[in-house]
Length: 194
Image (cartoon, rainbow, N blue to C red; front, side, top):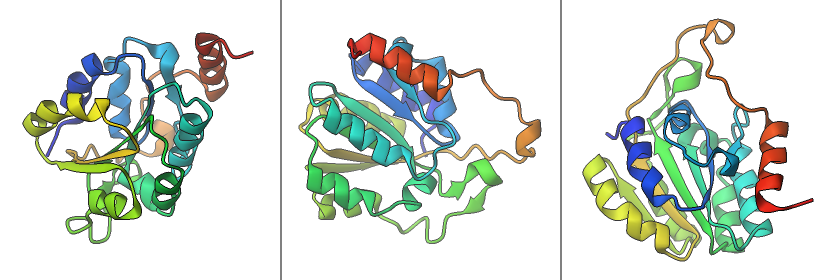
């Protein structure tokens, strides 16, 4: 399995100017690596809705590369979005799935059939232009640069080390993040959208 911190450290130099959206418990590590916060979108707490939001961004901004670091728990809440993405075929979209085989945010409950689900296979069969699976950082590091240059939609499934949160939500230490409204305002300014 891949450590999320290592995955983001590997990805960051290859980002270029891509718009990046992260979700899930593992997504919190992106804040430690991003060097272009104005091109990051905060969709925290939007499980099941982050993927369609990323698709909308890719369709609405076809000249911008859009990279989504999704979680399997969030994707399973809206699995039909894979068919929608494939049907819309955004050439600028890279969909990375961080699969930790559990619902880490809510205490680590196992995702049913987690070890046997082939998310990359689902994406490829639905019609994504390409799909990959990685379970170690070496293979991810060797391939992600090439993947980022491919015509989308591209899907990358990664087995991630779970980081289960068991503290009650109200007692958890939260990293400071920009609000959704601030994120949108900043992105609009960054892209020159009035």
